[in-house]
Image 1: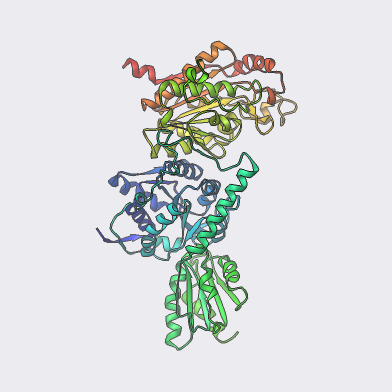
Image 2: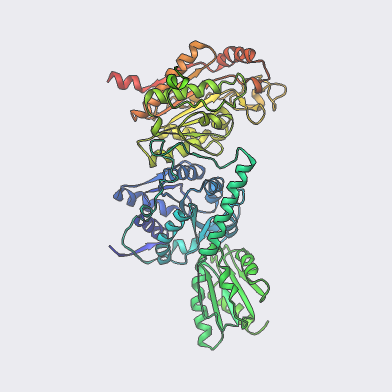
Length: 356
Length: 253
């Protein structure tokens, strides 16, 4: 049954993963992600599942990996410092080609940082905070509705490519409460046959073993080449973004998450005044939507990247733009208002329109 | 003609020679684990989660599914696995470095959780694969690659008594320390390993067996001297015993 609920977006994450068939949620408390586990601990038992509170994020990630070895899809939710602790195992799961769904409710700063929202984990999420040449599919929804809409897609990605899929949602968006309409419950993971790879005992198949290292240099080379081909296929096929009014734009604003969401109003207000401003909102941060920038029209004179950090996605924008137009940055993070306001963004766009 | 496979069954594989060093206790413990699995008839539904280090090779000699976990995290992987496949049998096979140093938190919380999984710690009192460094279970005064003048307990802490840490945990159904330094103790170790798996089959709770073994290479001793050292020095501190056996209580009931 479709249902519209008024929830915090952390709760929307929990509700949508449960509706998509996730029956095991491993987690450890951390602000601002803790509401996910509070919600799922009450909701999952109603559906025959459970929230498993582990002793640390190290244990969370490894239990998630063990669960994935049975061919089932588990989930976890955490925030910056917790995600740092999970990195070893995310590298392990990427190498072992184990699927899972993760949420990073991004908060500010290195170290323990602060609990206010931010987009500080862009590099960690998209570059791989763990060791080795690996990638994780990173989705950056900008509302509770988009979290719910992307969840079935994330399950498809996790199983199709047998890889961890990470939602990165800034702490501001995570803490917002808004109406979200959830689709009919459906176990999307059941649509995928895992019999070819799961580790369920030799009754079902000849001996299998999960090796993420290598016993020979040739084995290691083959594993890495297999991963390289997989990541190339993801990069080609799975770029996702939203854009508006780019075709004739003089200035294009680029933002993800909360700032991406603000672009819609920002651009509308400039268009009302006859100013040619458009926007691109990356939805997949990895693979980065290079294709959106490959077709930028010659009318674009400036690009403005707005982030809730000191400038991280701007690296990817610059690579994608490849010198076709100057790329500027506006960013704020931390403090009582941990983000650029619409006025901050308008002021900067105004200057760029004036050719400053 | 009767073959080894006829005698041992399918669990232990004979198409590959052990890669363990000559005299290493892992060879015996690996065989005992394989025999327990074969004897209990659980081969087809058993998965081994092995650690980093020499113990990581143990599954190569068995015809069972296996997962090689990172850095001592095997018990957490086993907990996750058990949640996904509650009717399968999952055990971890780890050395003392992997389990009692980097993985101690995961082990103790898995034990306290009481979920029916089995953990085997093969304790040779040093880090074997990385070159014989001090482990949490190195003895006082023991010379290792990183304690050239012997382990000084005031600098390095005391040898860690792992099962003793778990004996007060209600979730633990079987808890034992054994050794394989003599034929008689091998028989006892075989029984404990079998009991640990039996506890899991009966879903009585967490089960753990520590096995004291010699590492001639890491100890830099001849095989017979390494066995003598374990039988005397190591067992003087790490006393073999069965701490908890809920299997007996269960049978009595």
